[in-house]
Each structure stands twice: as structure tokens, then as C-alpha cells.
Image (cartoon, rainbow, N blue to C red):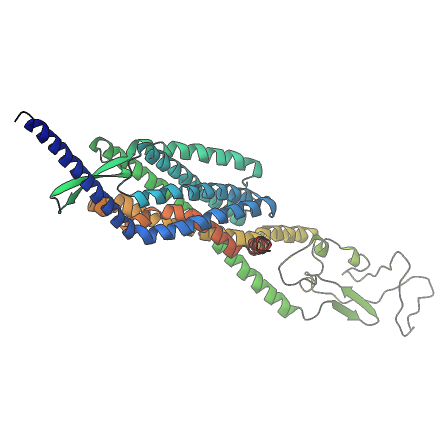
Length: 447
């Protein structure tokens, strides 16, 4: 009789332990179900993360060792370094999806979110600066450009500003307790997940930061669309103009040299043989020495070196008084030979017009602009679903396990990371030298 309370206490403890073990088994079973549901997304992101790690390392090596250092190339090198770090911190994100409702490490949750936002924000602002630099290079080649020494100051400012933006994740991200109902035991089990805190006092602050993020991303979107639209339009417009000028010149000029013949004297008028309109050189238009022995006023001056040649039939006899009367030369329309005898003013104008088209006509600059334009479009497409899911749908659909851990939602939330994965793939598509570099590297590794 005296031992019955003790045995009741022991029985209660054993029952409690068995119930806790049973709840833990149910929690692990729930984790496995969520993992199975997210498994395709986990595998897909893991493969892309591996491609991004390798691709960004190769991009860093190529643009550092194999490319001429320009402002854009230096920015791409920094972008590759940042994208590599983004891909590295995509690995903890995969671990979060694997453990899902069993994530209880608060410190790891906050640090992962902080570094991830820091690197992603840096990548976004670098794409923004590259868009501005490409626009000035193509549309305003004579305006003040971003110099190579200025790149380090710009990058430093971007890194510091992104760091300040990322500090808020240490406040608004936390381990959220999830109450998961289980119909088998008519109770709820407790799970843990790393996401935006559900504290009512911090919910308004989180909404303000999301609004700030949206405004910054919207600014970057508008800048990218406007700058690259003008750059691509300028490239196409000047390409069409060059083709029209080339066709017009080829129709008017049927031969390489133009010769004006008068009686027994010949006047040879050379012109630039490169009539395609693709390139002008200073030597094509800056030399008027070939015309110093003739003039349009009808006077003829013999060459100073005494190499004046008489007509082939030998009928030319100088007058007895010793004066030399040259045969009259008909008046020539100045417009007809203006292409052959441009003035120094026209030569300067032609050279200036040629310099204005250098940035557009250069194949490297054109391909570089189109490549970064595509990378920026992928950036826009990556962030649009993220804001729809994180900001808009979260306020109307709600949060919790039923929303946060859906496969489609998790994929949309990881798209900003995948933007850094796609960049080296875009470099490979639009840069033939980078493709040759990859072939050389992989062939060497295979051998």
C-alpha cells in the first residue's frame, strides 16, 4: 500500500517518455514526408549549385588571365567572385530543406540568412553598375566613363551598402515554432523552421524592409531595361546605317580608281579602297600630296623631281620662247571628286565619325553588351517570382508549414540564388573565347 504512489509516479514517467518517443517518431516521419515532397527541388538546386561553383571559378580564371583588363571585365571578375560565394551559401539552404521542420539552430539560421542576403544584394548592384557602364560605353562614348581605378571604390561602396541592408536579417529571421496537428493521437507535435519571425512586434518592421527591397529592385529593373534598350537600339541603328552607306557607295563607284582623261594628259584621282563603311583610317584621307601637281583652275605644274612624262606619241613640242603652255583641263564638278579630295575639315569630321562608331562596330564590345544584357534579363526573371511569393502571397495566403514548405514556394524562394548560377552559363554561350578556354581546360583535365 505504501509503495503504490511511487509505482504510479514511475508509471507516469514511463508513459510520458514513451509518448515523447512516439511524438519524436511522428516528427521524423513528418520530416521524411516533407523531404520526399521537396526532393526534386533539392536535387535540381544541388546540381545547379555545383555547376555554379565550377562555372564561376572558371569565369574568374578566364577573365583574370585570358582577357584584356577593361572596366567591364574587372566588374565581371568581381561579379564572379560574389556569385561563387552565393553558390557556396546555397549549400546551407539545401540543408534547411533537408531537415525542414527539424531545424532548431538559431545562430546558424541567422548567419546563413545574413550572408546570403549580403552576397545576393552585392551581385544585384554589380549588375546595375555594369548596365550603366555599358550604356555610357555604347551610347555616349565621348562622355565621362567609369575608369578602372574607380572600380575598386565602386565595389567597396556596394559591399558596404549591401552589408548594411543585410543586417536586418539578424532581427527579422528566427526559428519559428510550428504546431503540427496529428490526428492519430489527437494532439499536436512541435516542429522548428528557419523563416521570418512571427512576432507581431517585428512583423511591421519586416514589411517595411520588404517594401525597401522591392523599391531598390524596381530601381535596378528600370535602370537595366532603359540602359540596355538604348544600347541595343543604338547598335542596331548604326549597323543599319553602315549597311545603307556601304550599298550607296558601292553603287556609285564601279572601279577602284577614278581617272579623268583630257587629250594627251591624264589626271589620276585615288580614293579609299575600303568602301564598306566599316573602318576609316587616317592615311586614307589625310594626304593631299597626290594632288599638288594639278589644280582645278586649268594650270599645270610639272613635278619637282623632273619626272614629267610627255604623251606616248611624241607630238608634244614646247614653244620656241621657252614657255610651257599646258593643255586646258575642263572644269570638274567639285561634288563629283569630293570623295577623292576631301578637305582637312572633312577629314577631321570623317575621323571623328569613325571614332564614334568604334564602340559599336567592335565585335568584342557588342558581344559583351549583349551578354550582360541577357544576364540582367535572367536577373529580372529570377527576382520577380521571389517577390510575388515572399511579399504578396505571404500576406494573403499566410505562412506556416502548409505554405512555406511547398515545392513550388521553395523553388521560387531559391531563384535569387540561381541567378548567380546562370551567369557563367551565359558567359559560355555569348563568349566564344570563354568556350575555347573551357574546351582547353576540360581536354587537359581529361588527358
